[in-house]
Length: 418
View 1 (cartoon, rainbow, N blue to C red):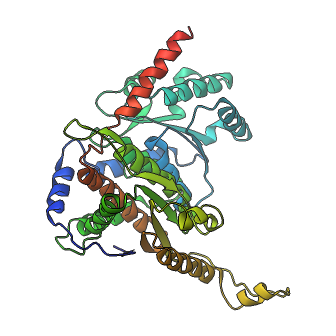
View 2: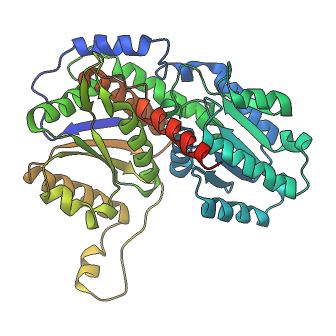
View 3: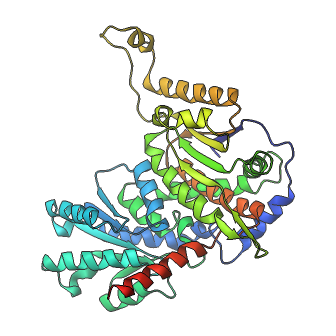
């Protein structure tokens, strides 16, 4: 798997029956995150779309929530070339104004706009679509020419974007009907921007495929079962109901934001599967090392003991720096015989030891390096862990009724403004 796991204390008992529950979850035809990336046409269609527009130098990704967080994570973690990316992922008028003004330094023919909405009716995405269409119109781009600048990703069966694509002759990629938005990083939603960033999506998929086998091992050493049992035990026995995601890598900082949506939207539920009001959930907290050792770590170390920290360590960085210096100073001298990557390793080890001494629960993951294979592994592992935690908490991890209610009220308030 290329990932090693260490727990601050090992769960006393692993219930292999939970593996049967997980197998039922991933067999659900309406929740196919565990298998969808195996569909070769999703990869090939993404590559065909990339090849059609590959000369474009500016990629504008338009989406919100899972339609943007997964692609942002991939591009920020693994991007290898000089393609310029803009993520229009909110409806802040000032930010969108700034982003559109940024485009004025480029030729429009160098730009490709990727609109992502599974339902095709996401109001924030449609608002951005209107604004961008107007922006292009002001640049003398006709409606008939939009097909040269737009690509849509949406449900292939029923979607407002799908209907609009037919009217405008805009090409579409598929957001699989049986995969929720927060589980769609390993679909064309993430594949197309990844390709523009120079990312090998075949390696992403290979990493996910290896993790499939690991997650299905009928063994008490199965890391998926161990992680789920550990987190549930902490919640039941110690009321530890917050989860800190803290990769020790600036490139993986966006991974924490992706995890936050996945964890929060999947597990935060008012009712359980019996219809009882339970207000379930494990609250995610974004962190990244070593920066947050000088920020949030004071709270994590000595504040309320209601958090489990997930620390992700990168064993081998792609670059390194010697810390030798001609400048004088006691601490400069102490560092002079080491490399920067050694300092990072020491910070991880020191933090883990201090957390353990303070009896703070941790899960320590180590990946060999930050590359496509390991990112595919991480994505599928945490998607799988999220789904299995839904079983432990006896809730549906694939719906989001609280989000839908907010959308209904938003349109209600809009109508009052008429």
